[in-house]
Figure 1 (tube, rainbow over the protein chains, first blue to last red):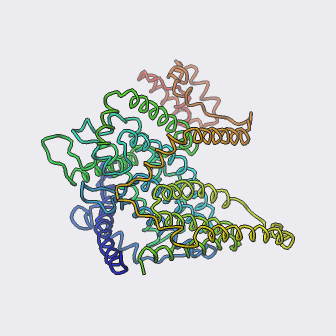
Figure 2 (figure 1 turned 45 degrees about the vertical axis):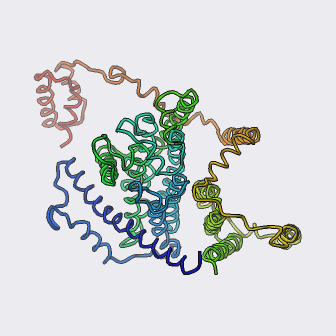
Figure 3 (figure 1 turned 180 degrees about the vertical axis):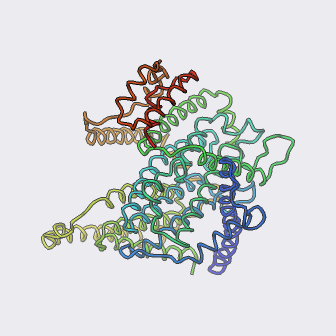
Length: 341
Length: 243
């Protein structure tokens, strides 16, 4: 590839990235709106209903407000790291979208090791939190960062093991192939043969994104707002954007790996991108539901759940799966044969 | 110039810069972050060499887990750098000798191997569907299974040793036992007490409440017992005292 062809390729890729990022940012905006409406409904309130019809312009009003606010940098903070931390967490949250297959053709980078790439990128998100907590030079921010680091490292293992189960039955690390291995109706999707792993994966995902009930990194009643206590204006908005982009990411991955991605649940309806978005929205609803329902976990309980419950559950289920594949028992072995073909 | 080559130069320059940063910066947290930068850049260079699996694993394991724990520790340490700098000149000779040996070895190796293109031909790029994850897995779990298992056992021993070294029993610490907690029945924790109004009067006189308040409490408690409510009367009494 010559230099100019390379440059052209680069520009074309940048255009495709914009095609993913812009709708993603819009979905984040309306996810915050949906969150306030859903939690409002659960708590018998109305939620935002003043800006635009039914409060539909509320996210834009929020963004405008944050844009016009001053970004304060605390005097004794590490200036460079303080400014780069929100960008780091946003960068990691966006970069993982490169390998997500929206349909069998709509994918930015169809790489073989897609699953590993996603795992690697989601594990990078913690740097934004740690660096923000340390650079702020504040006790509360630092406590939040430490909590978040320990929590993410703990739940990453359970999450990784859950994904090992997925690649055992699908026989591939390519996200598109994983979806293809689930071809059939709703009962061919991986949520059924891998049910414990599905549950472990999704709850670990909620913990990884620091969402309620695992939001001790923010813990506004104990450590004010945790790692982003010193951030204001756009810098704060970037953290917010990263958190919600990560939520959508976890939901989308759950859909790809356990709920058949773009595949239709019933044979008489055609497959398509619409299914992918509908299922992702369905999974996202759980994030909002959890937040409105559960009180915050105590820190030692979070650690216990991650290390002593989820990791043993995943190890047991991987063993069960391995034995089933070895003995060629129906659901697990069947799926593998389809995936390899 | 080849686009790939440009990418290589950019990332390798940043890699060398970051590596220099690790040893020159005075702040240990900054040093750890420079190391993270070095890891990410070397991962990209591996990616250019089509070693995707190793590249992603480097980011996943070293950047995503090891360095996070490293930062975790470094941020909490309060290192006094002055004593660490003592004896710099004493170690300079030894350190210089080691560096010279490494540089000599590397030059020797490169000179012997890469004296000409014919001796070290450029590798042919593999087709797109070639997966080196699969190749690595095949090699590790078939040809080198024994070595792999030995490595796994050594790691397991290391894990057990690390836990054994750091675990200490503290008899005074109170632990929760969730397994027992979930087995608790209503009868184990809750006691329903039948109390008649005679006892209630005694409680009222014990408390320091003003007479009016205790009278209200009595009335309150009496109401409760009239309704057949099983609330212990002490609740009624405290409720009356509060205002």
